[in-house]
Image 1 (cartoon, one colour):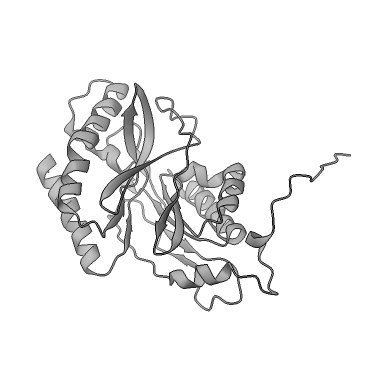
Image 2 (cartoon, one colour; image 1 turned 180 degrees about the vertical axis):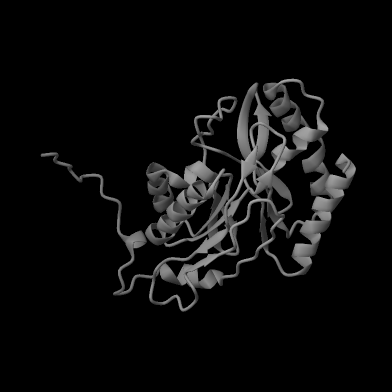
Length: 268
């Protein structure tokens, strides 16, 4: 497949999903790293740098010129170079422009990347929404920050090499949903790739909703596990149910309790 064919295939897939009613399209972490096959890089670092240039100079302008401003697409993540630093960054097409969410907490093997310093929150159907990349979803400190913003919707592109990794991301995503009163959707990278940084990945997508009585729909929904197939899976929820949860009632709602910084821990 040529680069032109790859771009056309991606655009066709996005348009097809939009025509079928998709309001948000989420791709997995390091999805864009597959573009490395279209570079002539000789080293791992050069591969990342050239892929970053290809994304910035070709892929993003191409999609922006063809997508409707009403389409919201999260292109998983890929390398982004700014000021000589490389970030594992998620391009977010929203309201006709590109936003970028850099990964904040890097894994030990992401040695060529620089951690991001900012979390972007944007409005989507009235929901305070953010993109939290893989390992970031497992960080309690970030969860505290998200509670302060009263976040409503979290999108988690991820890349894990086995079911343990996928379980870790999904179980933490479930916890974030309960403690933050937010809808959380995960999307893992699957299959084999010749790129060193990606290699082999597997997992399953999930939708998590807060554990509250007022939610009459299934609060945990999963796709099948996948290792090699191209899997497209959809989840649906009503944004209004998340907004209504933010109203105080007699039901226990951990996301409404103020953050206390005066707790003392005593070790005996």
